Image (cartoon, rainbow, N blue to C red; front, side, top):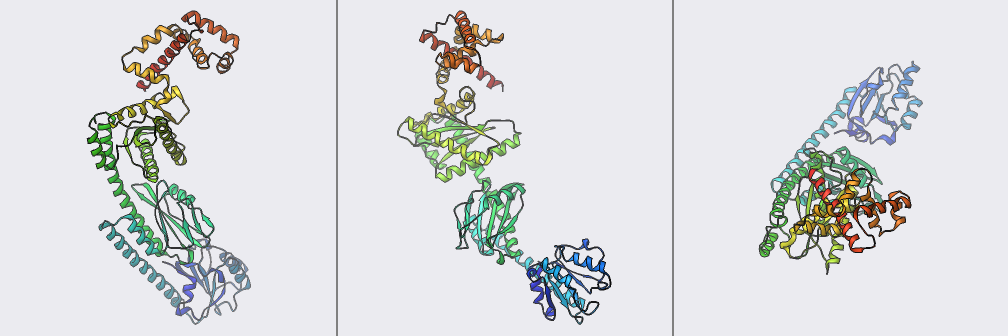
Length: 556
């Protein structure tokens, strides 16, 4: 631990010395003392060096005076002590002006004080301070280690750290949300990790947290008279969050840094332990969700209620499944697992804020989420389930917009033995999302429209392939040969037979559209005046799209 120039001047040996310049630089820290007679290469000086010299050769040599003046502008030095009456009767005004300009203390030493007496006194104080730091470091280490061994929680550890440093402490998680907070300053107000104020001044805590995570290194800033120190919590090269300490800058010392550094290790150990517990809990919940609910094996309501109570979940409320995955699944498996973990943390953060229960089953590239939904009827419940999905997407995009997600929502069921249907519906909504709304991030099963009817027909054993071939087989063959009459018909029916809108959407002339429609009538026998026939053809087009999409989905 270094000492300041101010502290050095308080030493008994320095009582006969005189500070003649650089009065504003007394807070500079002395890390080492160097005695120099002849200045040759000033670039070799190190940060924090305190230079002692007799000024040999400075009077006779202007070049050496210029070099010494340049030396006084080097920010590395903590101060300069010059002997008087050896070679210099008076310290040149140029030296004093340069020192004042750069806030570098110059101390005038009388000739009766020996070099060794000064260096010894300063270095003894530096060594003493270092010993104090080592003793304090050991004390903090023992105290925090004892807390871990006694299974103290993070709240108690945070209170202890705040006491050790006499500072306000914020603990944030990797989502930069504030998890723990101990305030030691009445002028400090904290709403969350984004809004921290000293009096009327808002502190840029969020930006500091981002810098800390990006660099995985501690950083410090002095703002409005306060020092803000941010230390990362890292284990296994994974960033778990940050420790933020806020304290009046003139009361901060190296012991505070030591305490926070030790605490960051303790937080990492505790968070690793908590993570292992949560992963076990999540795995148990996921297995229960998979076996009893998603696969539909849970047929006994009282047993489901009982098992739900054991894992802290209430199955008595109306429930809905969500299927969450990523729009662009091109990431490596390792990267995908990291994203899934962050997605789970986003869900945890959001639902904890709402004090709302949820269960999650992790898949290879997705998450299955089950939660309750309020509402007096199906319409209200669908609206509320959609609102939950919107909050998830909003929260995710705020942090991870480079990896957009897509959410499928199943129907809401009060009968817990039918929840497997909601799980299947949520996944199917994602599977068919490109057929419905390719650009949307949220798809409810009820948005499938005709496709829901076709799925039910397929599940009941109806041969959809035979159905669409009987109705539009010739158009499919024609489309494969180049002229996509099938698309023309699909767009025409979708636009309620509006010629202008259809031609505009297909980027063709109305006469071209009329010619194509005549070809379609000739090949299919379709009479556009017949509503029943139009419905039958439209359903056949949907059946063709559905089976083609499902076949492609299986291949990929």
